[in-house]
Length: 371
Image 1 (tube, rainbow, N blue to C red):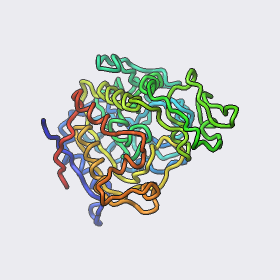
Image 2 (cartoon, helix red, strand yellow):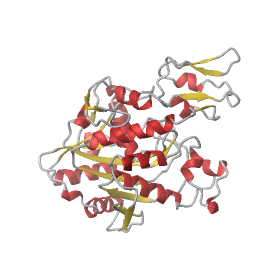
Image 3 (cartoon, one colour):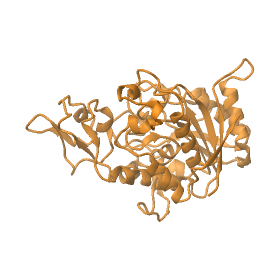
Image 4 (cartoon, rainbow, N blue to C red):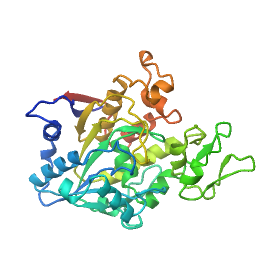
C-alpha cells in the first residue's frame, strides 16, 4: 500500500511571514504548481457558511489561493451547491446573498461566486462511475464542467459522518439537490421518545414538514415525506432526533465517497484543509458551538483521503478544550479515546475513509511533512 504526502504548517508567525504567506508557501511546497492551470476553469469548492455560524473559512484565505491560481494562469471561481434542507442556502438567490454576507464576493476574494447547481438546484451532470451505491452521481453543473478542482475545507465535526473534511466537502457539497437526496436516502433519522422534551425545534426546521407532535406531545417523523437530510439531528439539543439504526449512516458515507470520486474523475485536483475552529458540528447550521481543540494549522495534499486521515489524527492528538462538548461528555484523553466518536456518538467516521480507499480515491497511510 502506498503512502501519500500531506504537507502541514502550524500557526506560529512572524512579521515577514503571516498566515496568508504561510498558506501560499504550503500550497507551493505541496506541489500545486505541477497542475497546468493555463486558461483552465478552476472550481474552488468551498462552504460559504450558514448565517449565524462563524466557524467557516475566512474569505482572506480563499482570496490568497485565488490570487495564486490567477498567477499560474487559471480562471478561478468560488463555488458550492444548494442545500437539501431549509436554510439560507437552498436556492441560488439566498445562497449568493449568504456568500456576500459572509465576505465571499468579487471585491474581497478577487473572483466570482457561482452556485454550482443553479437557481433551484436542478442543474447537474450525471458522471458515470458504476460503483456499489451510485451508478452515475448527479454532480452540480458548474463543478462537473470545471477543468480543475481545488477544495478549500474547514475541518470540523459532523453529526452524520463523524467529521466534515475534504471528502464531505467534495462529495455531499458537490451533489445537486437530487444528488443530495440520493446520498441521504438510507440515512433517515429516528426519534428517541424518552429524550424528546417537545421543544418543537425539529418541526420548525424540517424543510419537508415531515415531523409533527404525536398524541402524547412527542415528535414523530412521517417517513413517507422525510428525505433524510438530517437537519433535525443537528438542531435537537436533547439527543432525541438521532441517526437511524443499522448501517444507514455508513451507506451515506460510502455514497459521499462515490460522489467525491465522480467530482474528481479524470481531472487534476488539489486540496487544502484548515484545521481551525474545529466545531463539533457542520458549518451548515446557523450556530457553531465552541471548538473542541485549539486551532492546529493548515494542511495540503493531492490525496483527499490522506488529507482527511491526517486531519483526524492531528485533532485526536491535540488537547481537549475545557468547557467544550467533549468535557460535557466525559471525554478521557489519557485513555487515547477518539474525539469524534464522543462528539457524534452515533456515527463511525472510519467507514467513509475505508471505503474511499477501497474505491481508489486515495490512501490512509501518509507521510506528514512539516514546513
